[in-house]
Image (cartoon, rainbow, N blue to C red):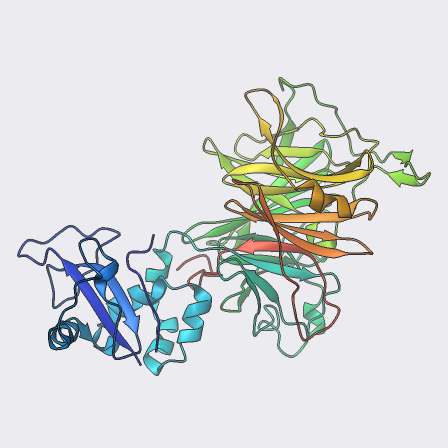
Amino acid sequence: MPPFTLLFVNPICLKYKTSSPGNFPEPLTNTSLYFPFFQFARLTHIEITLQPFFIDSAMEAGDSMVCRRSHKRKLCEDESSRFPLNELNQDLLERVLSWLPPSAFFRLTSVCKRWKSVVDSATFRLACSQVPSRDPWFFMVDSQPHPSHQPIVFDSTEGNWKKLNHSPLLQLNQKNRESCKDFIPVAASGGLICFHRADGEFIVNNPVTASCRRLNSASRNPQSPIRAISMMSKAETYKLVLVSGELPNLTFREYNSTTDEWGEDIVLKRKADRSVETETSDDCTQYFLSKCGNLVSTDIQRSPAKQYSSILTLKDGEEILYFLSSSGTVVACNLTRRFFFEYPRLLPVFCEYSIDLVGSGGQMHVVLLSEFLETASLRVWTWDDGIQSWRQIAAMPPSISHKFYGKKVDINCTAAGKEMLVCLNSGELCSYMMCNLATNEWVELPECNSNEEGREFVCAFSFEPRIEASIWGRM
């Protein structure tokens, strides 16, 4: 809950209400702010309005809607508790504006030059960093990306699509669009998104501010293909993790944003003392006949932006990276203790299905779309250490999932908190569903009305829209 409530109407004045304005100061808490000229006043409510009137306090406890005061008395009280917003000192103004959703803040920067200048203030960015969390945005990836396309994001706060006024990578190279077209998003964390190119180059971008940073190239062995790319950001730093090799010969290396250097390759050993019997797989390709008589490979097919998809979590103080092997098994790499293992399959290898991983609340979940008994089902599973088996935590209603039957739909998912976005694509349809993993509520997102016709999204990356997120790994 923010430390104050903002109500915007139209030109600007500020109404404040105080409680216990006595001579004894109260400790500064998340519900307290101080004006320099009211040292002992605790703010309980702030309203910004643009009209010569403001909302009465009749909704508060102890107020009566029946009682009417004289117009003169009310006017005097209103005048005593209202003053222009431009009388706020810079520090308090920045703290107020830092709690606004980013989309609302950028709209309000056109109010005056002072508000617009706040964006570049170091103290404002510090105030933004003290906001614990922000509702996620989802950076959408086109099925046929083009450098001229403006990026599209879905704003979960306002529940609508937004077009960014800049292309993230063109800020890095305005003259040569062709040099940017081969970069694809591969990972995201905090307020940053990581882009990768096949030649091994990486770019880190803040989609809100359009700032970009080209990272030092990571020397790699061409005989050891990259299997997973993940990203983890903290308050003043971030790192990338690459997992390379073929099962069972896996290695990983890390990039540190503070030193701008890649670490050495570290070998991951297979953990042999798993209490659950797992089917060992060395990623050998197998084939089988589908129910339609088609020859099908057991290797899963991923979109380019999701081929390195992985989940990086902290569990009991240990960093664990999860990714899908080429045969569809979930591989867990304990980066702290330097070993890996595979979880049991959810479905037999000779089944047709679409699968993806998401991270929510520090846990890894498996999203699985399969067909059975002339219908399709989409379910979300998590591994339960207590029963040493997979446990279902959410499922799409059959009335929705049935329309995907026989369509050869590919699913790509991302999650932030308890909100999960699922992109469902095939040659016949393109749909986007939002699921609340806590309540199992599913909502289909509205169509994205863009000026460019024929744009369809194959996947998305969730990030927090943070103005203060630094590509240099420090505030």
